Structures are given as C-alpha cells and as structure tokens.
Length: 452
Image (cartoon, rainbow, N blue to C red; front, top):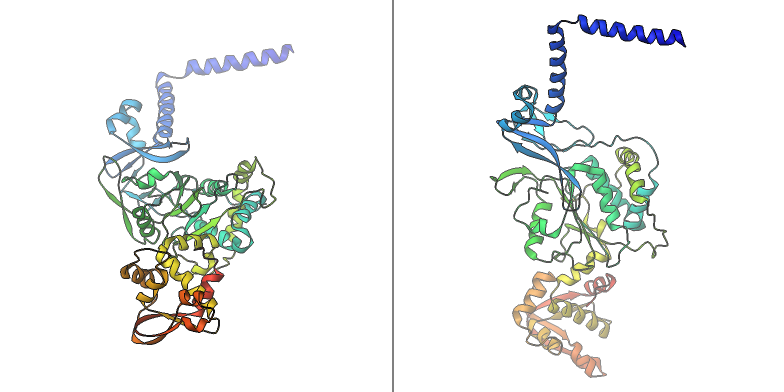
C-alpha cells in the first residue's frame, strides 16, 4: 500500500516538474491549439454559400417536431460570438443545390452545398414485423404490393412521380397516422408535417423542398388548392419558392403529398377520372381484429434500418406505365370511386340512374339513345328547372359521351314504361341529335357500386 502511494506521488511530481519546465512559448502554442480545435468544431455549425453566411439549425415546428433549416447571419454576428478567427474554418461553397439520393448521397456536388439531407439510418438486414403489419393494415391484401412499391420508389427513386396518397376514415385509431409517421421517420429532415393552413398559404418555402409532404387532418375542398396539388404532383421542372420577406427563387420540385383525413369522401376536391389520386379507406384495428400496440412507434423506429435493407434488395412488383408510375387501375379503390361519384353533378348522377333503370325495363336492348330534350322530359320530376346546358355538360364533360349527328333512333322512355304495364308503349321514334349509351356502360356503373 505504501509502495503504491509513493509511486502515485512520484508520478504527480514528474508531471509538475514537466509543466514547470515548459516554456511560455510552448504553453502559448498548446493554448492556441486548443482554441483552434474549439473554433474548428464550432465552425461545423456554419457554412458560407457564395457571399452569405448561414448557421445550420433545427427549427421547432408547431407540433414540436424539429426540421432542418438555414439561418442567415451577418459575418460580424459570427465574429462577435466566436472571434474573427472562426471565419477561416467555415467551409465555403459556390451556391446551394438540391440533389436527392438515399443510396448514393453527396453533401457537396461539384462545389455546391446540397440542401437535401443525408439519412442517418444505415440499412442492415433484420426483421421489420411492426412496419409490415401497419403497411398490411393500411393497404390490405389487394393493394399491399402497391403500398410496398410506393415506399420502395420513394426511397430508391426519389425523383419518380407518384400518385397523391390520401388515407382516410371517420373513425380514430385506424393506423393512418402511424403510417404517415413511418414515412416521417424514414425520411427524417426530408419529410415534413404541415397543416391545411400551411398548404393554403402563399408562402411555400417550409414544404416545397421536401420529399414527403404530410398533411394531417386534411379538409381542403377548395378547387384552387386541388389545382395547385395537381400541378405540383406532375411537375418535372422548377417551381417558385415563396418565402416571407425574401426574394423569390426557383427549385426543382420532386415532393410527394401524403394526406391523412377524418373527412371521408370529401377531404379534397377530386375530379372524376383524375389518375393523380390514390385514396384508401383505412379500417379500425377492431374491424380487422388487430390488437392495438401502444409501443408500435418505438418498434417502427428500431426497424427502419431493416426495412430499408429490404427495399434496396426487393424487386418492384409493378413496372412503370404512366407519368404517375403506376397504371391507374392499380390503385382504383372503392374509396376513390366515392370521390369520382361525388365529383359528378346531380344531373350527371340522375342521367346514369336513368340509363341503368331503362336497361332494366328493356332487358333485350343492347343500347339506348336519348336526345337532350328526352333527358329533360325524363328527369323533370326529379330535378326542377334542368336546362339544356346542364344536361349537355353532364353528358359531354362529366360522362364523356359524344353527340351523334341528327338521325332516326328509338327512344325508350323510363317514365312511360313505368306508367304502362305494356312496356312497348314506352318506345317512341325520334329524329334529332342524340347520344348513344351501350349496355356495357350501365353494367360498369352498377359494378363499381356508384351511389346516386
């Protein structure tokens, strides 16, 4: 014990002797080296782009989420806080650029500072049962490959156009927000959660540079917003970035919109036949007999590296067949059809019902013909003051039928056939401009469960 104490005392004495023997110049060099290292470390928080200085920060959002941002600072502000010596250690770049990649990321591209953020996830093989269970729950067996392809393309081909994704249900505790959180966690600073007001604001800088734009509690029935979404979703060039109190700039837009809503069937204004939308009704966990997992968010976070490894090595199920990558029929859900139905005017809905009912009354007919005045006569008891313009718009714009030239045709009247037991009394001969409805269309309308 005494030997050990003597040894420690001798070591401390040698250290003291060494320190006393260091010259003042050497001590100054050591201090300078420490200060230099401190400045180098602090300089990592700053960049100089062209003539401007920026501090890389993580700005809190309204819901407490942090998102990466660049705070412009004066050079004098930096030197006041850290001394002038820090300036020479701040990295310098020609300008900003935006090059999205998750599998071959580069922070600096040809002297330009890449604003797209590198993911911290490192793909590694492993299980991802929690992630797979939520994808299975949201998309179901019929659309599971669409869901997996969507996420795979988002990760491996960030510039590929994809349909606007809308997950909805009036019920809570369905997992739609959990799926949105999966995307948010996967893509980190390249994803953002915003609200309806952010999307409707004139200032888009908060979201326009992100890959995944998640809009929660969606209720955006204004057609102007829908037109903007349609334009952005198919954009392949540059778009204008509007930031408050700053000059407008342009950036290549490659964002994908993901909407979550409790406003089932009416969250967005979707035109009939528009292929830009993929709408899914998400069932509750109870409906599927699935036990709610209160720890699923933590499990998802841990499984993301394994899921990314899976996406890198998985073969895409669908091949590219449209500007939104997928063939439209791949994601033609009943929920999307609900929006298509709601997009048709009352006149259009009643015309469809008229055609279906008339075929039922005349089962041997393979086609029906109606002129505009015929339709007005048939529907006058259901829709008062129905004009020729309304009928023509419904026929040609909403239902996509073309007028036939003036000619003779048999007009099968639902109104007369329902009044008379002898259906033949419901057939009249006409000679005028008319529209032809094949039985196939009526059967298609019925098979898609259109609600009138």
